Image (cartoon, rainbow over all chains, first blue to last red):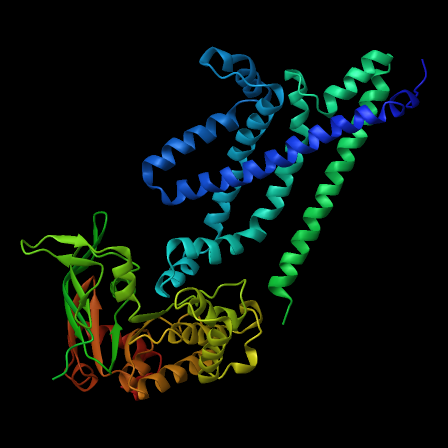
Length: 222
Length: 263
């Protein structure tokens, strides 16, 4: 048996549609995860003891169980509680909730990294809590949360491959289908690795460029 | 006699089981410099932070220019928290300067000073920056307006922080060990700004370890020890001999370091 990537290259249009679904779910998952994660972190910080305890437990459960099992439970267990979801919405919800748990921890650390005094100064100058979050805390924590947030986004891209088991037609599902039709598993898996790696590399570079610009803006401009 | 700028009545502050302020009663006169002195842990910073409403007192009342700060007292003696907007309105009468400056690192000096003018006072960017520039000029830093805090010395950062507080035109300025994080040379430039302010007749409450500053600029000296206000009066009385034995003991540590010529 020869290693022949030609088989896969002939199937580029199908590969493209799988890539599209992966990108769509990944980016939407990040967007939803960042927004919900930020709201959760904010609610935990300012919402009092009970809110913090409840949300904290939810986050711990989500962080303490494999994504594979969460998505299984949501897709196959959902119907038992009246939650019938198609594969793509199910994948999107699963990815968003899973990533929100991790993003919320990043933002929680970000809030904690802003010195209390900077917030107190804003209060003394008459800023409301919302104004302080928007104008002081978010910009100050941006540089601190950017590297772990980019790292998490990269992990999410790879975790999205798990969605193939609930028949979401994303990249991994598409490529393994091509592989089994053509009896070219090794080629398929190889191409898959290359595409994921290229996306991760691109994300990393974008993240680093953003980090550089942000720190330049803050510390070097005179 | 004019009304006191701040009236502190039966103020108690506890952190859990620890009582850090015990039944403080004090009037801060308008247009004068009041210094709070005392050893570390005496409660002087906590008292100042109560005046800025950064700490909420456990009981007692603070009124600023006749308006209750944070709480109002019901006829039967219970306290109730005032609505946030009202608390902000009373807090707006004071400006706070911190030991650690607490400038926002993502904004330039001008940004730090103009920020609250823009988003709290709702001035246009141009008006806010013009006002902010005037304050920076006052503390001698108009040529550092475009610098970020990380590019300024400690003394310059503290002067920006003072300009930031002054920009909102408070009636009372609160200083929490404003020079404790600075070396003696930089301390001088910050104390000069504070002296200038005192000469303009600004009401100031100054928590300080600079006994020399307290003795020469202060017009009311209050001495705290273990959460109690031991005594309060003009420096001529407080520092005159015979002194309160606890103050004598406290001052000894300064006299040891050669500050005897100051008091």
